[in-house]
Length: 129
Image (tube, rainbow, N blue to C red):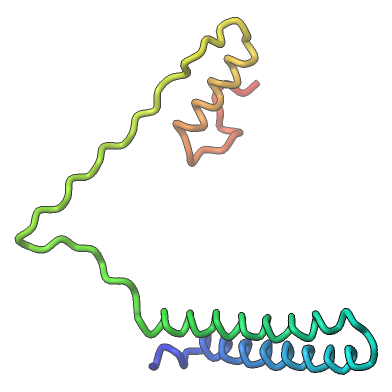
């Protein structure tokens, strides 16, 4: 229960209370406008409480997740062997011939280099002119 009284959670509780209060107040305001003759306000009078309910739903879901704690690690038992890992899938080369179009071949080389160097910047490409 202590996890729900950290500064971050206190801010979440306050935000939930403020949003629900505002949304219900806006719903009540729309009811008064609808009674005054604004027919569109009947739809808004229903919509704002739905928003408030959604805020409460999300807040409750997050509280339950926080109280449940982190998901348990899927460690294998001591007497049980770990499941074999699947090998990484090898990417095949292009199944088409781009030798007749030098621009397309250069672009495909560039894309292959980007795929082989995922953490590199486009400015690091050695074939850049």
